Length: 374
Ligand SMILES: *[C@@H]1O[C@H](CO)[C@@H](O)[C@H](O)[C@H]1NC(C)=O
Ligand SMILES: *[C@@H]1O[C@H](CO)[C@@H](O)[C@H](O)[C@H]1NC(C)=O
Ligand SMILES: *[C@@H]1O[C@H](CO)[C@@H](O)[C@H](O)[C@H]1NC(C)=O
Ligand SMILES: *[C@@H]1O[C@H](CO)[C@@H](O)[C@H](O)[C@H]1NC(C)=O
Ligand SMILES: *[C@@H]1O[C@H](CO)[C@@H](O)[C@H](O)[C@H]1NC(C)=O
Ligand SMILES: *[C@@H]1O[C@H](CO)[C@@H](O)[C@H](O)[C@H]1NC(C)=O
Ligand SMILES: *[C@@H]1O[C@H](CO)[C@@H](O)[C@H](O)[C@H]1NC(C)=O
Image (cartoon, protein in one colour):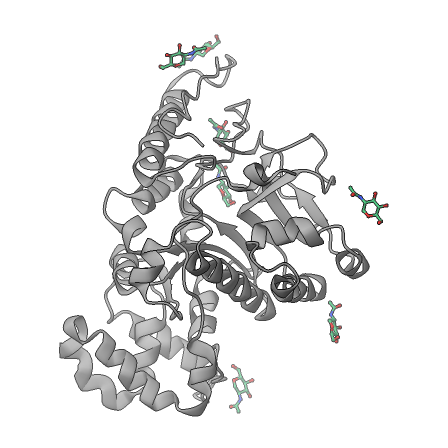
């Protein structure tokens, strides 16, 4: 596949990723206090609780669906401890993350993940458009209960909290300012993408399946019924050749469904470590390098490629509005262009819904990409 295919968009505002981990082992309590002060502007009045150390951390990081109010979290918290007969829960480096995943997870331990930074979290920016798609989608709004927003800076974190979603603040190596400004394929950008990959491996290791969705993916229908029941790793595609098993499809990892099992955990491990084999490539290109390699074939990872008719994008749009589950603003450069065309996409969907779609086959006119281009 030629290089141009893969440079499909200004991939999300990712980010610096998880480094909460190593630091937490030694000194949980000092970390609690440090984090508390990080947010002291907003939480000053709550600092009185800092004597409660752990409790504060739990409150702060545990996600909620309660419109950002801290108080109702006590309920969840006591339930949590109660379920444990008052014994202290496992307190390893993934403590915060576990709480969030547990709260957001479906019964079969699946979460929906997206990453968010300041710019994309702004009102009327990508995140709002993303959320609106769930609300106007066919039976998709309940899926927001399972969404975990991985915020990479304070503003994104507080926006997420205020909107009442499950939020996880991913403390990262770069400053958020640097992350915001990271352009496609700069060293910081690459670092962020690789850290994100390692973070996804952590999610799998904790036993959670996930749908990873870029925030510029519109959700119009529930994708779960469309996932192949016999798969480990399913990826959307920039272009799809009609065969979901064919590793020569052009994948776009901006929308993924991955099941947690030994194969995928090892696969992600290998993928992350392959960075050094292919210096200078980003994780999507390295995937293309390793997907038919000996290691991946021996692991027996069941890779599947999603049909663009169901999981389309601006690169290759769904040909049928009666089928489309998601629409990704890939093949798009520039945040303003992306916003404009995603808004148009929502309008097209609304028009479709208000028409007599049950009987007539829709004359298909997405009208996008319009502002977007490569
Ligand atoms: C904890 O609670 C469970 C039921 O919720 C009970 O079966 C178990 O004996 C309790 N363990 C202790 C140590 O109290
Ligand atoms: C929405 O979902 C319902 C129930 O699954 C279905 O009957 C209906 O046809 C769907 N509408 C569209 C526009 O897909
Ligand atoms: C909506 O989705 C939920 C969960 O998947 C399902 O239980 C419910 O039947 C769906 N509703 C319709 C109208 O399809
Ligand atoms: C995964 O690997 C571990 C250790 O190698 C093993 O104990 C476990 O049974 C495996 N699980 C599955 C589902 O294969
Ligand atoms: C994958 O690798 C195997 C073994 O090297 C080879 O036979 C096969 O043609 C490759 N498939 C693709 C699509 O490259
Ligand atoms: C949709 O089309 C069918 C068949 O043409 C018709 O019977 C029905 O009344 C139409 N519904 C609306 C809301 O126009
Ligand atoms: C699609 O919509 C655009 C804008 O509304 C219009 O200019 C264009 O002619 C339409 N194309 C078709 C094939 O209907």
